Length: 559
Image (cartoon, rainbow, N blue to C red; front, side, top):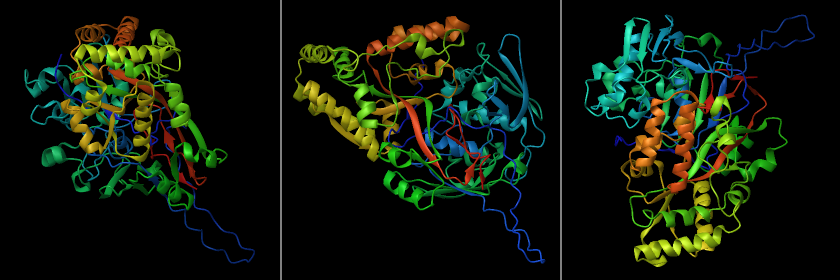
């Protein structure tokens, strides 16, 4: 098993992250004609000016970097999707995509070679053409050991990618090749007939070769170090305060983009955000449970499902959490039903598995419905507390330790935001009430938390999670394999068998892997996400997708 470290997507429960299940069409909206005023006098008035096409939104935490091949948090996805056009764009149609930088593709009979045709009218922000060389460069850059991307494992399905990252092969051997100026060939390690569903993701959007070579790993850190191919370009970035996007006049579909400006504030405090929306300083707001009653009758209010799971992660390589009985005791005394109803109160579902609803299962069915509930706690096992108390006592006795020793040593990390702290403290209180165990909760900024997740120096983290990038189940379970922090041979064998299989056989291996992971109590599912939001009446065409991307600004029109 490779030891490449990858950061878990931090799912901030308070931040009301997004992903829309029943969203509008992804086809670009037509620009509205300017309104006119009519006077009873015979003299005609000139046409009234068009409504200012400015959209104001809050994204509750600053992205660390706006490089498709380096970003590590969900808060970057919407901004990246606006700045960097993927080869194909997400669509709510039978295919799941529409053309982006590419117009079409051909797949070989064995689903290992994808030949992608780029559009010839696509340009970078600076007016230079987007070519197959840019695409080839981008993917070779991300697997180059000298670049050291923490996301390199995302591209291991491409032929030789993993060997290149580990230094066993030269970068030139990567299975991405520019056949001519506008044709790119992707060769994969194994058959993957759903590969195009990966190409729609922000993390697969190419960057300009010239800019990548000039800025290196600093690409995406400041506006002047980003060259856009998408509908918008970044013109201002006040770190921890705001980001301003403006329409990219060189975008291939610019004539069908109405917005001129997207103002993005980066505010954590939900009361501040609510106040801004109330006075019209924001045109869209994600809502936590405190504001649902205020807006539930608003015409712009909606609840939407998300293909997302939040979880607690225990580090099995440290004292106490290296004892499965202690891990199981903590899992049993986390009441998911009470947590989603009394603490979250936003419609989220209790998570009795790692795969959320909406993930593809056997014969195209729903994975979660087919696999059923795999986790038990106080909400579905009346003897959970009794079992947990006995398990904790046995685990501590095996270690020759006491509860006091455990309390002095362990800490529970969470993201430093009001909602995340409240959620972590609620779980802490469940453990205190049912196990008489008082663990320390330590809030930490994402930029400090991510390195601890990377190097395995954490004890436990509340509020980690996974947001599906595609409907395929592999993404929700294989990150544990690629992360390399948990060297469990049974899990490794199951995953490696799934890598070799196709169809229902592969899905079955993933079902077995999910059950095994949950039986080891290293990942403790918390909740499956929904999101509640309200949109100003003047806004139309604001698209939110259930997978891969939070917000899509391309079709927004201000009426």
